[in-house]
Length: 515
Image (cartoon, rainbow, N blue to C red):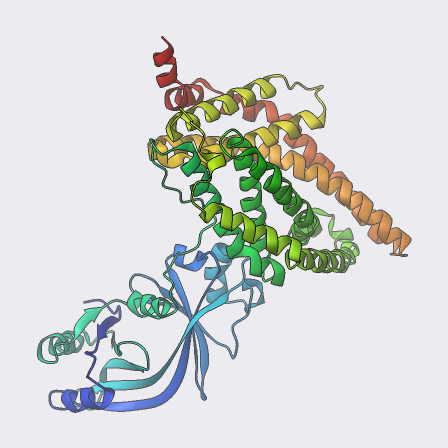
């Protein structure tokens, strides 16, 4: 038997008082302490700790407060810190094992309270004939959930732990449970379940589904993602709310292009400009978010003698970000935004209109095959036309084509064998990285130049301007490396194996029909 805690559910009518009365007939024990506590579960909005098989809980009482990290499956305590409040971001935690465990999965995301459980806590020591503690119990008497009992075996007293386990399951008829049960039950009271939001698309389209129905299914999911991230974007809780908001907007714009012959022209003309506007009004804030997130990297890239000289850049960026955030939030709370979002949702929820009852001979699968294959060939044509003398705009256009291809593949991936479509999406993502890097470094280089001009006009120290000049050179070097790496990455993406997979998944059946 290991020292892993054992978890039990008490029957609905078994209060702590009744349980102790029954326990006393077979076991010598003492109640070490009793106190009222509030347990609050925490995770990021997109469940990053849960995805890493961890649960964070904060227990607060009059005498003590601690934030603890548990293994989701076993309930084993991974780390705990005595804190009066839970910091919002992992960087705000004191250096500790706890911080090192959450840093990688959480990254820039905020820790948010998921739900609270008020309960009475009893800590019990099971004693042997020498009055030594051989097993520890914790009974949680909840106001809204099944009461929980946790058994903590002690090293060297495994036999006593086995005896208690047998008594609880045999004589007391307690039901074995798992640590995660409390977590799930608490979330259920809130109408939620672990992992109920993800930025990854989860669409289940059917091959023979009409193109019109497929379009609504896709648009509904994207609107759901926009609305899910709306409040966090306005409140500026963390940078990923805006990021996910913008991704859903970009996907929506791509879907308008995909379904331009499926949707009524009047609908496209009414709503496509609105989503283009959403992309525009959120762009500046996102750019400034990225600069602030990259600031530590900027500082680290400089020579040691210049690292402190760049310090004024951070408050400068923060001030601009706050102003941009304020202006963006106002637009996302405007009547223009609210009315268009409501109208779009009503259209998607309405029954098929007369205008959209057009006869489309293609099934969703046939539509997906045609559009993906066409976009893939377009990407190949644009990529092969790029050489060492091609302007930067050619790579930027190729990047946009790559995004459209990826969105198409993500929209329709449920129509294809999972392992094969995921392999191609991964290959495309890897190729997109070099195009994204080239674009990002160029934009950052140009904007840092503009920022240095603004700061110089504001009278910032000349050493800061010098440091920013060195930073511009560093970004220019990275941009050039990405530019030189393009040909190699394009060759990797367009190798025979990938081309064969694309052709097999999206083109072969249609070519067979033609022949």
